[in-house]
Image (cartoon, rainbow, N blue to C red; front, side, top):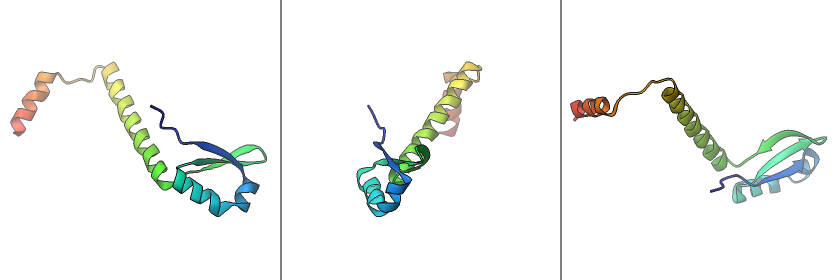
Length: 90
């Protein structure tokens, strides 16, 4: 399952000439633009919905990594202990 945003390279000069069109395309087609200045990456334009989605995924990946680190370092709670705690709450 591929959830990558399409990435189109645009020069800063081209972006200056076609700013409204670029932002409209980013918003409507969920396309990201890699903006270059003299052939070097200078920035990225992405629509707000895609930005939020990327941040939610990053948050999830960070939580998974922290959980994996807990497992690797032995910071675990046995299932029976968790079950007993939940039983107290109910």
